[in-house]
Image (cartoon, rainbow, N blue to C red):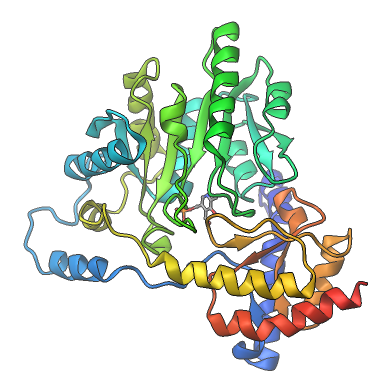
Length: 393
Ligand SMILES: Cc1ncc(COP(=O)(O)O)c(C=O)c1O
């Protein structure tokens, strides 16, 4: 087969989640789907808000000239304006509509951002553990991922980020609420990062961008607020989407927004628009752009996820697992009772429980449970989790 060498390597590197997925399919065939507790994928299982369905039906029935035609590569001006207004309210900024670019999800947004910023061998600093696709996105444009450890509570280790900065550093990529840890970085943590980067940027006389991947920004628990990276740091860019907030991952709709103070903001915007076009996205899905414009104040029922988090956390705590309680997103990242997280995942697999080893996220010694599943799956899996940890003691 004439598959590119680089892709062959990437295929073998990205095999952990795929492997769990394949194992799951085999188990489901053998035992039936309800006897398999599949926590491997972050596919939201809470329905989109009612308003989404109403707006979509409404739009489907309307006659609008060129409704299904190409949109401007940056997206519809009305949608960009609505999003800018929402960002201004939540982040306390003065963004204009043309500082927002519509994208094909947060994944599409990150690819457009890195295509716009990276020259070959430019470095992007990524705190561990991280979302599995980041290194691939960075590598797509010849960039190099520089991993740094987070603190024990998964907060950003500012000294480690500082120490990783070189002449080649183009960006720091953060994600809060975090996949896989559920961590939300505190205001102080973000402020410390911002002041360190401002210092470095001034000394090096070149911008280090802070790219904040925000698809879970509205999936937070216990009424906490997510501190804004966009307003904390001048050279910041957010990649966001409605995949989780509105449960629309298959619709591929999201956006990029930049801090209006960024130097050469217009040039950056033009680069982002060009990259949206030439990466083959052309534009974000037209119908979805119109729908999300109307849903700026809507989100999925987060209480449903909070209940799942609480069910899972209290069950696992009783069984003796150690973890940081997730503050947002829908992932729990407990310590593996065995140092070998792959080995422990196999012990869970014997009880038809599918989770992903932390090694796949750059977090060996941990494992990830995606709790965006039915309550029954959580409840019925708890005995298996308890037996698995006993087997290791
Ligand atoms: C941290 C993180 N970033 C980006 C994405 C991609 O999101 P989207 O579906 O909006 O492209 C995901 C999806 O799970 C994610 O967890």
